[in-house]
Length: 204
Image (cartoon, rainbow, N blue to C red):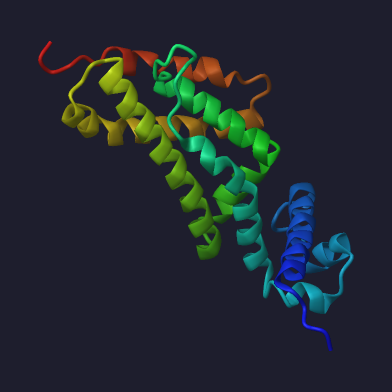
């Protein structure tokens, strides 16, 4: 019997994950059965379970596949003049890229909700959300030191709280994007601009 190459196994895993992602997006995590995924993938039961032991494992793998392309976009950004982007504008851009990558807010909200009861999915969610907060924090430090001219230690002391604030705003934006018709994420984030714009160096 010929040995199955690792490349073939990766292709088969990708085929299964793509089928699971389509099924989850169409019916939701709870209403999608393993039979649905098997039918969507066009593979045998053994082929599916040879790679993934349960639907929970598949959900976590789909979450990682969906969010992985967004990770490199969490790096700090400057505008065309080399000035660090305002942290809230950075957050708006990153969230727009993330939602474009995952096809809207529906699947991220499913992952977020299910992560409260599924340890595998919680790990996948925290990996992505942690990367997002880390990217926001780095942008905040860069902006505070270069635009607001804070000392490095001042910027660092403020960064965690401000990053948590922005992360909470983005979570709220995600929910409202899904449920509020015509929701304007950019206008929503701009309401928080005074929190940042009023920051001044301690020595001023």
